[in-house]
Amino acid sequence: MSINQQDFTYVQTLVRQKAGIIIDDGKEYLIELRLKPVAIKNGYENVSGLVQKLKEHSRHNGTHEQVIEALTTNETSFFRDLHPFEVFKNVIVPELIEKNAATRTLKIWSAACSTGQEPYTIAMILRDSFPQLAHWNVSILATDLAGKVLDKARSGVFSQLEVNRGLPALMMVKYFDKQGDSWIIKEPLRKMIVFRQLNLLEHWSGMHTMDIIFIRNVLIYFDVEAKRSILKKVRELMKNDSFLLLGSTESLINVTTDFNNVRHDKTFCFKRKF
Ligand SMILES: C[S@@+](CC[C@H](N)C(=O)[O-])C[C@H]1O[C@@H](n2cnc3c(N)ncnc32)[C@H](O)[C@@H]1O
Image (tube, rainbow, N blue to C red; front, side, top):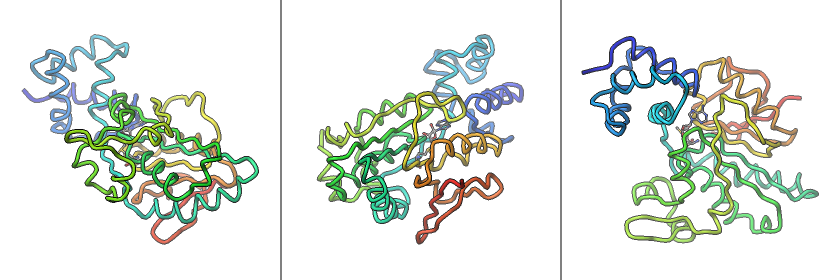
């Protein structure tokens, strides 16, 4: 039995309100596809049974979370798009090492980090190219809405397929151990990152000023209002010298004029306007 219009609208509204994610009309097949496994796991024959349960328990519980998580897109890879990480290595970090020399601190946030390939890429570059940072206070915070992807990120365990996507062989040898069919991030690298659950749409508690913010390939799922409210909060975490990096296909045109962009080859870096 496929999902009826009422149930579709209910799920559409739920994920929009709770995660900011827009599911366009006509995407019933997507909801069916993503929620069928959640329905079966929770003992329902079909998606309608699952949605019924959600409606009965209007207060959010584990099932609501499972539904929202199932409807997020977690696509990611090591060194995704490569060029932003070249700019990170060749421009951003050298500039911040100079500017932050007095405090010897470097604070990086990977927002919407999915299964961790982005923060681990950041950690590998810092370890590999900036030995002087060993004497600095470097923090990498990696957050995501979905607990399931964060568990995987924290575990640091990746399949052959995942490491084949973008990870240079030299990095694999240097920073991973092979265990059976999997590759595991070495402990010192894993320890460089703090993973935390954070919904970009909700109040961000305990956040501090950042030097570099990666918020890549997530704003595309939100409507303009949600993008604006997130970017307003992002701006508050940025200093004069801080950098913001978006996904390669994302721009701030028609969203906000609060940032200046600086182009380095194919990569746009954003700086807060004062
Ligand atoms: C496509 S992945 C991007 C991963 C990584 N930043 C990259 O570019 O490879 C999008 C991530 O955004 C997360 N996400 C979706 N809605 C969110 C929200 N409201 N708050 C925080 N994270 C969210 C999803 O769970 C997913 O892991």
